[in-house]
Image 1 (cartoon, chains in turn brown, cyan):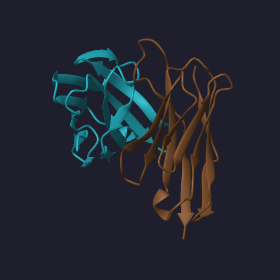
Image 2 (tube, each protein chain N blue to C red):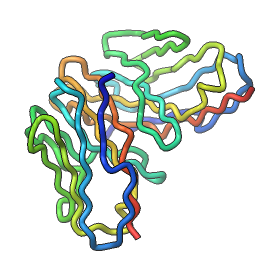
Image 3 (cartoon, rainbow over the protein chains, first blue to last red):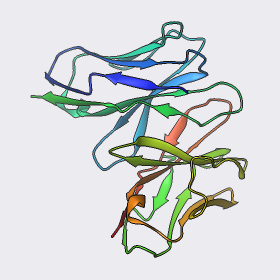
Length: 114
Length: 113
């Protein structure tokens, strides 16, 4: 059974710092990995989607990498801002017909203080 | 701006009552999912549909939960009778098979007293 772990569970940094969020998964047979952001009381916003054949994806100040063989992904946030404060979740999708059966990590709660 | 729309956003009800949550997926998406989020369990998949056909509802307590897609613009999740342990935020998500990316609604926060 696929298990997804995110470290750290919580992170507090001063504005301007570069930071890394980690996601690990136990079964390397994945179709893709998706990073989400969730603000309090809100839904999940898709940040980056990495297909299993890709190594990384970038969007603005965000960069996500994927090392399928070692079962790891990292989300790099450059020059963090208070508006980046949220919970960040990673989720993996299995291959084949199990589309949508994403397995989520428990998330990393990020606080960026001015 | 295309988005997944869920109603109601908040629902407080008493144990034993029927609860229906509705979801309008993004136009053109052919897959729809229901997830439940709690502090203890995180996000759990309850059911999902492809082209309106239910593909998997193994995550759903079938004695009290039911999920349907009467048409391509509406998905429903019904709980009857509701119990306090059903209190959670229920999310609907939609996507396209070819991209594999999911888009979530803002959720329906359910409190069962």
